[in-house]
Figure (cartoon, rainbow, N blue to C red):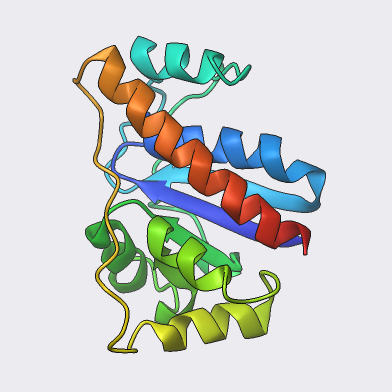
Length: 171
């Protein structure tokens, strides 16, 4: 079984949303978890995030934030961050191989050029990082403290990328 870990700042908006959306899109063949680099354990998602996910038929009300401090991220096939510093901290502070840590938008773009999310595809995606033809990939901004419309837009962006990732996982 493949293991995907999402990492964001507080584990209250982006990473738990991606966990729920990818689990919904990919089904049971993938182990998916989410954590926050600076999470205060036990906090619920903001109401705006809950309402945005309800539009996808998902209930995240039972989620509580979890920090990455005592988690072995090395067991993951891939660790996905939403901002570059999420990826950097996963590698530097949590000993994730740089070959397995990606920006969300970056990974999906690279994997779409591969057949599936296997060891060779992840290694190939890592190698493509250094090709001059690729522009910098966008980060997905933290919606915490923003309006419902911002949460909805961020959730829609994450949902679109999760669907694309689920297609790679199904191959």
